[in-house]
Amino acid sequence: MRLDRIRKLFNLAADQAGTPEGEAAARIARRLLVERSVSLAELSEEERAATDPFERREILLGGPAHWRCVLVCAVAAHCDCAAGYLPGRGKARLYGRRGAVEVAEYLFVVLSRALTRERAYHLVTEARGLDPAAQERSASDFCRSAIFALQLRMQEIREQEQGERPEVTALVSAQSAGLWRWMREQGVSQRVDAPFPWAMSESGVKAGYRLPLVPSVEDGLAEATRRARG
Image 1: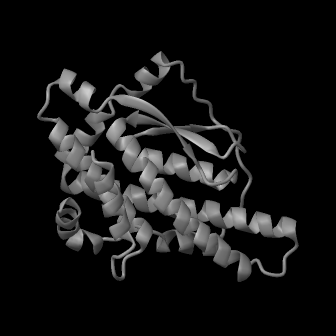
Image 2: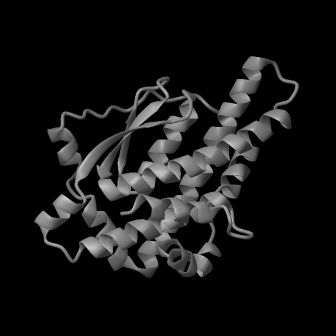
């Protein structure tokens, strides 16, 4: 999967009139995964493994905040990958097919930037006047609530895809088959982090529904794909 094409398509997510950038990006991510899976389905199992192997990629999260770790895990699930991290390091690892990992990394960047902007706006509006510790708690609750809303929206996208084109969803899932076995063979041990205390933030949930993801993007997606290829 060409990285320049992924960049162009995700850049278009910010240009969809009337469409939240996050939702547009999440729909584009699934579209890219579908295209990759359809093209690979024509190859033999050996050719698919050589063309799109499993890989582990370390990415910078843009900061040590725990919400970034939560976000990268949500993105990985949406892109049929897995994510691992150590809290407070500002880094994470994505595991999956090479093409899926590339898409997941770009989707994380788009959503992380959008949520960072929303967080900054929250701090100067609703959290203004609070002491530093209270501001940090408010911002954390805001971000976690926004990611919760994003997860619901991404799940809706996948369920819509499953309902309308089940054969396509099956193709995408088939490409990631064997991921956990491969991770064990590579010595990757996953653990569940201790629960992270947070409270639901109504404004955060609303922000999550504003972030990049929306049905109207589908109308222009075919044209966007054609332009990106050109």
